Image (cartoon, rainbow, N blue to C red; front, side, top):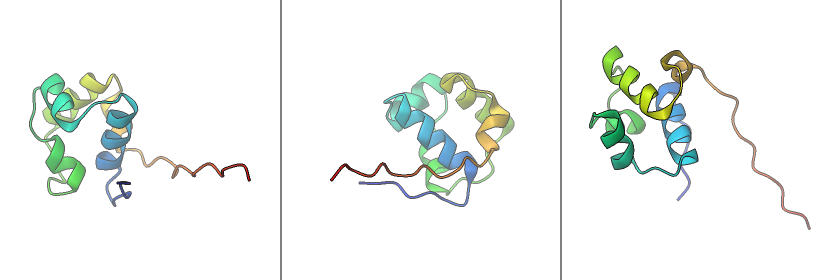
Length: 81
């Protein structure tokens, strides 16, 4: 199942980095010490506290401010025909 980009860079960046690390939402939740991951990624929780974002950023080994920056959409690689 492919995940769609949302209107929230925070949600998209957390999801993208988490998946690059090969972690589930539960694994990231445990590493960050917060159970807000699913809510943030789904868009249900659009304004998490600074402490929550800082804990998630630390677990992902990125700067918290970078989680708010809209990254260019990734293009799918064309398969060689």
